[in-house]
Amino acid sequence: MATYLVTGANRGIGLEYCRQLQARGNQVIAVCRQSSPELGDLKVRIEDGIELSSEPAIADLVQRLDEQPLDGVILNAGILQSMGLADLDAEGIRRQFEVNALAPLLLARELVPQMPRGSRLALMTSRMGSIDDNSSGGSYGYRMSKVALNIAGKSLAIDLEPRGIAVAILHPGLVRTRMIQFHPSGISPEESVAGLLARIDALTMETSGSFWHANGQRLPW
Image (cartoon, rainbow, N blue to C red; front, side, top):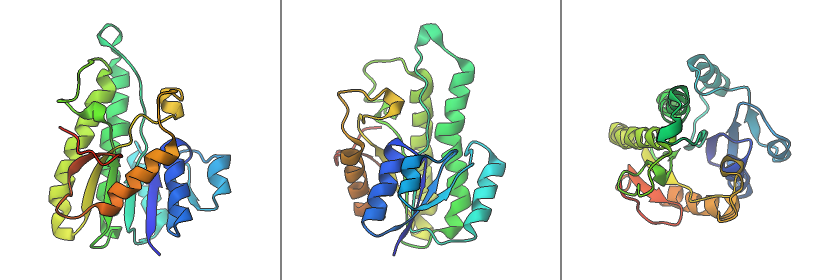
């Protein structure tokens, strides 16, 4: 039985990852700041009270895990604060960098010793972190933080190659979650996560460090 750790697991895409991973027989460790009734109903292992932008909280999580081997790590936690040039919020940009880019990198560093050869690390990013794909401007903090996460993922793929750990850099699509106010044009979390898990399952050392849409499309940087 493979063991997967999922961050941002209390709702949205993270919750659906936990649901689908459990349904296929995997052991799931759900990490979040605060659990939810929906997560509790899954009867997975929940590690809550974890603020991933805090290094002491990361250390606390690692201690709780007690060297549990991890076959898959899905770093999904993130925040979105919309802003344009006219309403730039410097503190909001810093916070998005902290949560969306720096926290996943710091957590990945701490979890790598528990990841055996052949395990997979998945970073949940966004095509809004694609410079080539940016045709609408705006969203400064979110775009900048996701570009930073993308380059961190590429470096992780290179640095973890000797350990036999493959890295996926994944865009979920436009998904009907609270983060985007359940946008009616979005796909369901069920559809998105089914595609994301297919990308993670298909990941090899040869494709490690690539930027993928949940639907299988390779995205430009």
